[in-house]
Amino acid sequence: MQSTPDLGHVYEAVKNSQAEIKSAAENLAQHINSLKNNLNETNTQAQQTMEEVQHSSEITTDAKAAAKEATEISKATIKIIRDIKLVSQQNQANAMPTYANVLARGGLAASMYNPQNQKASPI
Image (cartoon, rainbow, N blue to C red; front, side, top):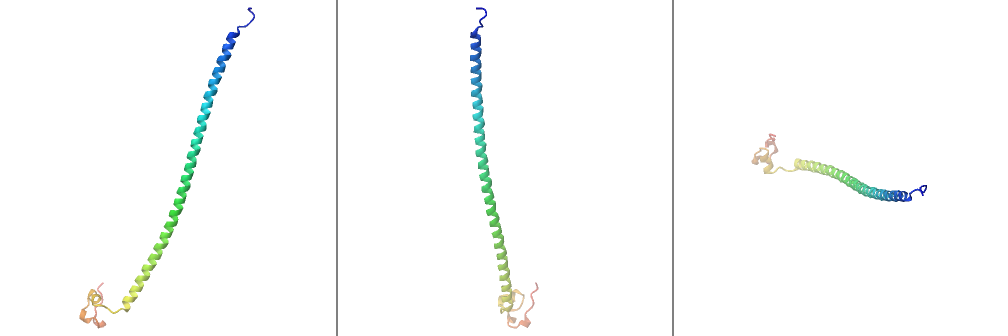
């Protein structure tokens, strides 16, 4: 009987090795699942960031268009104001002076209908 090895020790060693391998495999599976979840979260965050960037780009494009339109409206408004001033100046040159106009230029109300008696504006 001395030549037969004690299989009980070998059996216990194999059994312990199997338990350690099973535990290591479970830990590895947990780490793999954790990495998988982290990758999914990162993918979701990247998708959300991309959507936000696209939305910001659309807002920027709309703002540019609005600014361009506002610039064109401002130019048109300035042109209208200049035209109104020009027409107003032309109408003032052709209009008969009123008492208020003559007095505002420092003239005498009595000399209103005699353009030669009206003083020039001191300004």
